[in-house]
Length: 93
Image (cartoon, rainbow, N blue to C red):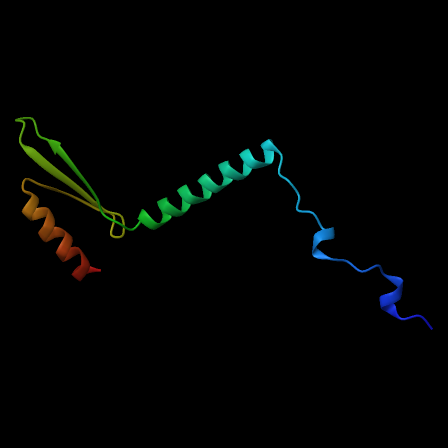
């Protein structure tokens, strides 16, 4: 009776060559990697408040804020008021 090891040739790690990617495969991989990173970044940022500084009709600063968790909008004339809103947001959640 033959042993199992004698019927199969020995394999070594050097006998298995790594596959090389074609330029097209490399391109597709790069695009998919960027897409996954963008989706993850958008998902992570989806819960963070959004704050924009604009100007009103008189040219005065106007801070516009949006809380995606509670889906509320607010506007403030002073940066200090925005900071208070941000602090209170964590206590409301």
